[in-house]
Length: 187
Image (cartoon, rainbow, N blue to C red; front, side, top):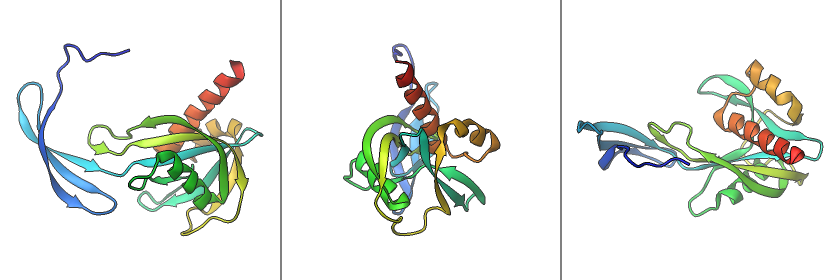
């Protein structure tokens, strides 16, 4: 267990909003570092995201093959999306799995929460482990993925090594799920 005794921290004297829309808020924070220097530091605020690692009884994970235009890159990703105001993150994960894949999750548990860029971006990601899912229809709404497939968990390390899995939520979710699932098998 870590403590903060004797440690110094940055002091935030305030923040002014520079840009704001439904997807992103950009601010300039008035901060003071431990040596007394004071300056403005940019801060990006994004809504929380909920991501689901859906595994079945055959030790396979549900993945989506997606193109990310910002990087002009394809990769396998987990289903997930932004948590709407007042929505429980677990409900978001369940909703997103069904909307994006057509599968309805059965049993859901919290896996891990993290901040992907803690130095300048506030964007909490909440990951859930889903045990089993039932196909209830086709994906709804906008096209989220070119392909949706059940992939054996044993193939995940090679897919990561090849660069077919490269986004933070998918990497962290899959690695954490493998650790938890393997721990249960030994325990």
